[in-house]
Image 1 (spheres, helix red, strand yellow):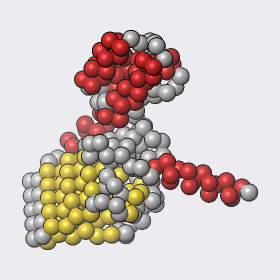
Image 2 (image 1 turned 180 degrees about the vertical axis):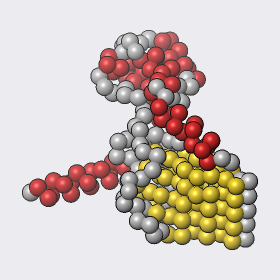
Image 3 (image 1 turned 135 degrees about the horizontal axis):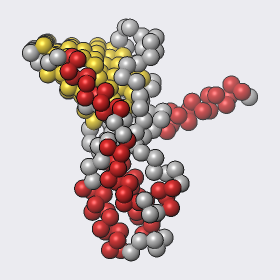
Amino acid sequence: MDLHKQTEPRTAAASAPVAELRASDADRDRIADILREALAEGRLTADEHAERVEGVLSAKTVGELEVFIQDLPAAHQGRTAPAYTSVPNRPADGAIPPHADENVVAVFSAAMRRGRWRAGRRLHAYSVFGSIEIDLSEAIFEYQQVVIKAVSVFGDIQIRVPENVSLRGAGGGVLGNFEVQPLDSTEPDAPVVYVDGWAVLGNVEARPKRGKLVADILDRVQRKVDKRLRKHL
């Protein structure tokens, strides 16, 4: 796979109008909550609410979702900002150490990291005639930026992230498949996972795990605020 050809769709998606971006499950839940409040306040009848919720479930883009609340006060109170926060395609220079906090290696075998585990700033995954699963859906993010270097040679590496983090990728394939599905979080302080590497006659895939959300983001942000307050006291 040509590296330059692979990066073109990500660039185009980042520069596309927000209304044209594909809607996520989190976007639909946000709009459904607003419709539920409008029903409780008497702004919508039961039939209107049911009709709009049905439309929300079938909406494909952020712009299509906004249509269902444009006549409601919540749409004009800054609560419905599009679920899109642009993050750079690469981490800032010097933000991530060059050495890995952890190595995951599978040679003619299988290896995995999943469940409740602490994700460091850099993780290296090497699969040679093996398979690796890296599941961050329940991981504890201690840093906002996480880099995963994935190298697959005649192997398979599967990476899954929660829906409320941002996901970026840069890599390529040599007679193999290197695929990273870009993701943008609605949380300004949400973790950003960067995946890079190569797939040589192998496979590397990174994408969100539907229905999984990081529960530690707000706690991490609160700890940061408390730390700053202590410095000024």
